[in-house]
Image 1: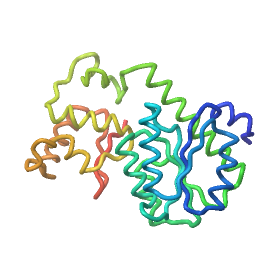
Image 2: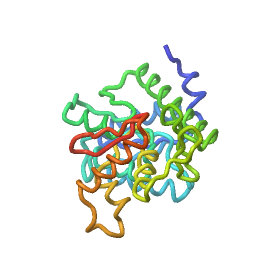
Image 3: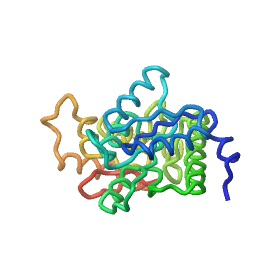
Length: 244
């Protein structure tokens, strides 16, 4: 069982944003979170949460380490808030808390890339376990990002984030402009779904009249042949993701 001190050793210098519209639950949970995190900011609905998320970056030049949010909230619900945050920072660690088991949201939340889905009321041991996993993942990602700019995509296949160049067995694989832009989107989102809208906006932001599903399918088809040791998965109705 994970104890308080084990979790605190990971979270004591971290900043957390907590969005919850239930005043009593917000107060109770904030006290628990405040014992674990160096900074805990709260908001009572999605719009306020987004503003605090943006304000924190303006003031500190960094994002919150972990975001915890409810789903059903006034002004902007949790789903819309999560989408907005992932547009700003695709690798944000997000934990969703809800009073009900809401299967209609669960698949979408998983596809968006949330870290955990928790039911209220929260068990203290469960909270410690979730924060331990989330904080550990965050710290590993920071270590990896500082450790190397090259990402392994399969046997002999490497993507250089600094130069946006793809290598296979140390040989450069030539990519078109749009193939390179598409790879940048996939790498930025890691294993999360890259939505069709995000892809269209990236590839054809200056020429939106050229964007269409058939053109994108052609680009995907060509790229699949060049990165055969990885898989570009079509997530029906949502977009694509790179599996490696």
